[in-house]
Image (spheres, rainbow, N blue to C red):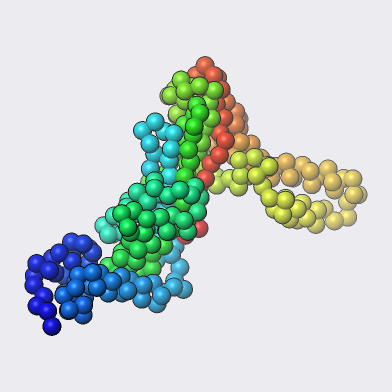
Length: 289
């Protein structure tokens, strides 16, 4: 049996981030081989994950990165079982490290691809497993999206104060001066907060699936029993118009001024800035969803 020195334990602790006793036990089991000891610690995390596989991960953090020129941004959530763990330093460190993987990830909207992204020979999934071994609770990537703008425009990210909900929007403008305008930046930031509050289903009606539309029409039609068919159709059409106005971002009444739609707000900001501006995409994440 190899002698396990304090220096060996400290070295493994620095590499793995695990507790002193966990590191010492792993080194004893590995007969002093640090590489094997790391594998033992990782297996501990995998065993914890397997044991808690059925647990819900309804807590966690939403984190984001945005480039200095606001042309590239990522939004992602890391989820865990309890709010206590979500507030721990180890979990926060893992969430922030996840952003480095998000920047390196080649996919734009796949949480699975993000988990398999590798930096310096280590996958994000392995980093998460190591964190699970330390914390003893199920942890997983929740949602992930990356936006890029190649022409004039900007990306805006808003993270709610509780760090559990975040929104990212892409704004296209006709030139970069408009994108750099405080008027457009403020309007876009306000709209990002609006999205967080109202949770629209899509940018416009074309983004709502035919299945949802058909389901809504059936519900409204069933409510109109006993009326003539032509009257029912008109009433249902009116209800669908209201449904789109409530659930499509560009048609929603703006929360700060309900006399205008969100689409009008961003268009007016662009016009005042001397050009044009419109929202072309958005995504909104909440932990546990």
